[in-house]
Amino acid sequence: MFAPVVTKVKTEDGIQWHCERQGSGPHVILIPSGEGDCESFATVARALASAFTITTFDMPGMSRTTAPDSALHALSASKLAEQIVGLLDQLSIDKAAFYGCSSGGLAALALAADHPSRVRGVVVHEVPLAQAESIQRFKTMDDVTAVETCRYAFSSVMCEDQEKWLALGPAYHQRLDRNYLTWARNYANIVERAFTVEELTKRPVCWTIGSLTPAGFFFQNVVDGYGAGIAVGLLPSKHFPQVTVPGILAEHIKTAIEKFPS
Image (cartoon, rainbow, N blue to C red):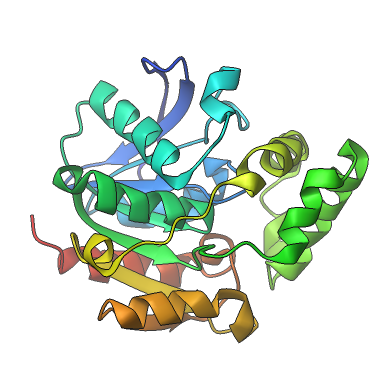
């Protein structure tokens, strides 16, 4: 059984990253989604650690990763990718495969597009390529309403298994109560990026949406994937397969990465 090594890593942009690393073999980076906390990857990371060196982290300004205001100002997919490359530099990781769901998937696609020399390939799930009207409403919500709305949306609308969501534990959910406001004020306003066919084909992409998610939510994933010649598959989950079907997700990631070039 692998146990993660927890470290604090400061990058030149002033971000103090909470990092968790375990395993041995080729590097795989697990990028958290909107809730920003890497604890949701614990089961997936353990399952992959026998074949890969797994690195994951809390996102800038989230949970145990602190960040200056400049790191959260005008966030975009490209800016998140640059921040992650800064972390890779500090960890002496030259090239890796990446998994990301939601905004984590957006960052993974930006890494492949903007920094292809650092990327073996990416595995992404339900990438927010277009901003829903419901997300735009967070810009005008007061703090209390934003947190309460996030609690409901993350636990119920985006997750099909309440028990597994709650099983992440009180400490995790206490951190998320703080993260929700950071997400609503910064990450929810990420400027969407329209990836070109050239950008989507610089590095291998394995792409899925959830079979339990209403098709319209992430239909643009299918459109853009198909346009770039990428088959978009299904995982038996909604938005957070790392929480509800971690074993299936781990095997999916492993199978995809084994097909990526070294």
